[in-house]
Image (cartoon, rainbow, N blue to C red; front, side, top):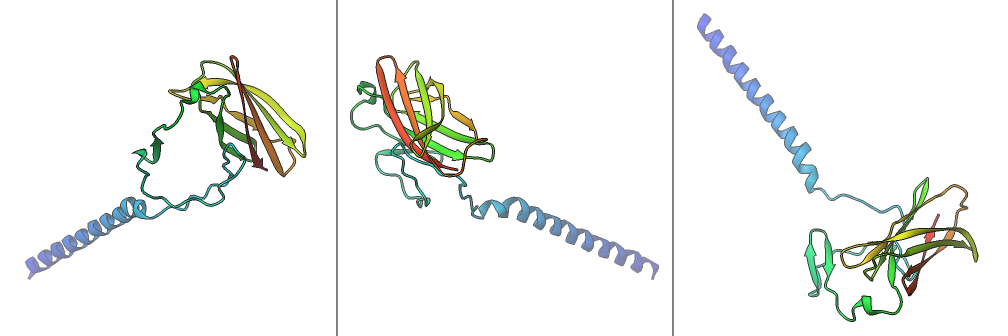
Length: 183
């Protein structure tokens, strides 16, 4: 009889051990793999504007890329069609990001032309009066250029809408990009 109790104890121990291993495996699966499949709600908390001052209040649903786009990763890369922007008499571009955090107003600009050097002058206007101005250098990218980026301290700015004016200068070419940001 004594032998049966020892065998029964081993069987119960083995069953409990297997149940514990299966439970741990299920928890690891749910924690590591199941959450990756769930859609994430990532609403931007800032306004992104284009070079004409308009904003995109609602995200657009993803769709298949147009035939003139090449997809690499998440963002489609546009094939350039039309006249070469490097031959334009004026500099062109767009405000790619304009938003505010609790401590800074952040503005990013892309310039359509490839430029070796130059400057970007930022003006923030409210009610027709200049509230802030600064200058940054142009940075050459592979086929375009960008401004170094503007991180303006938010202290001293009243709430409201501000007009963004960026004057571009490189050699004998100039240009102007406008947009807006809400604080």
